[in-house]
Amino acid sequence: MRRNGYKYLILRCTTTGAYNYRDSEWNYSDIPHLNYVHTKVEGYSFYSDNERIVNMFMQKFGPFCIPVTNYIEHTDMKKHSYVMNILGMVVSVTTTHQSEDILKAKTTTEYKFFYRNFLEKLLAIAIKFATRKNYKVLMSEDVPMRIQRGLLRKNKISFRSDKSNKIGFSETEDLNKVNVDATNFFKLKKSFLVDINFKEEKKHIKELFLTVINFNNQISLLGDICQHEGANLSYEYDTKIKKCRTACPWHGKVISPLLVINKSDKNNHKFTYLNQRFNVQIISQGLLINII
Image 1: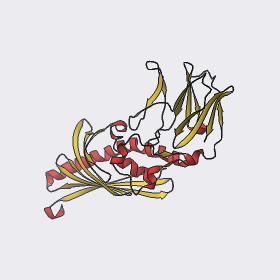
Image 2: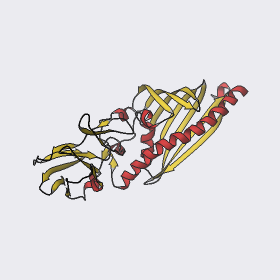
Image 3: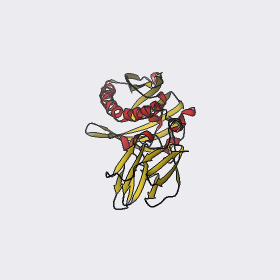
Image 4: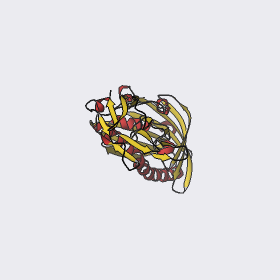
């Protein structure tokens, strides 16, 4: 760009938080959350593999909605590199993910807005100003996702993707993938006996990140954590279909109960949650949950 007479303005933005740097890496690689978490952008992917993606954002800048085309590379777990086109202006972006402690990370994004003449410089100044404001909005929506994953890590819950060299773009699109692994969290847990004659509609078992819903002579067991990437879940009973279900707030996937049992059913039932096997049985004292 310099050889062709371009100059540039620089904008550096940094966020830090109580999460692992790989949570930041995942956040920048994760494709599906764009259209569920962000309020100022809609994303459309044209091509993606685990190292690169070509997409377009419909980006809101104040009262305007502007198409932004992107080419993004991710060949190193600690870096994402972009080339963007905004209103004909080339913008290069580099985001780095740094570890400051086990559960403290710093994410730095550097923007370069290229221009050749005075009019283009004025446009670069305007886009730089809008980008700074937009960055604050994006981070207000992204950082809580990373912090949620950091809270899970604090409870010895890990993510299978931590074992990979990098978290690729296309692998994040598999919403059926169980990436959350709580086997270390459940290792020291014992059997739990839950009273199923409670009057309220639902009861949380905080020790197991489970919710029990008692409705229409049925007991529904539901996970409080999305098994895909760790979002918090909240369920309601849908009277039309007579089932409990919810949608992941990060990726929109509809999630059904782990297990539904009639109160008269005294058989043993098994289910898997967060990569841990459970055995459940209704006995005279209530619902007995055993960790296998």
